[in-house]
Image (tube, rainbow, N blue to C red; front, side, top):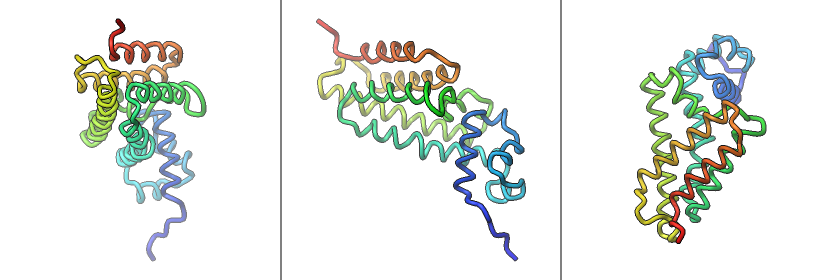
Length: 198
């Protein structure tokens, strides 16, 4: 008789995402996964493979469901620098308050974890970073077309700067940074890209 799954793999994966997002892969054992999902080890391994494969699947799902839609929205927003400012305001709010306060971002967390040595995991991180940077560059291009941007601004370099700032917000918030300080840093960065005051 074939093995019939008596659980929802998507629901189990959502539980795993929350676990890895909050704790990271190094601090999470297989028993933690069993406890979080209510599944036995054989079901977990049969469905998702080992811990590394499970983490990679969770990271890809997090990127697909949590990161990509927000970055697509930013890239398609037609307001220029205001869109960038609103992106960071929402990011700081999400990272510093509510259910996921001080969890950081699963992607940013992985950038600083030992798991980034894994080529498959690193490929997900690089892909997400390119998307993040491209979304920033798209907003900056709109800002330039609206006359909001310093004409000497290098769009690619500025997009990389803002992408790095987003990772920094994620990591600093995980350490309990003051949201007001994060807002001030973002305001300084974005204002510096704008048209100089006469």
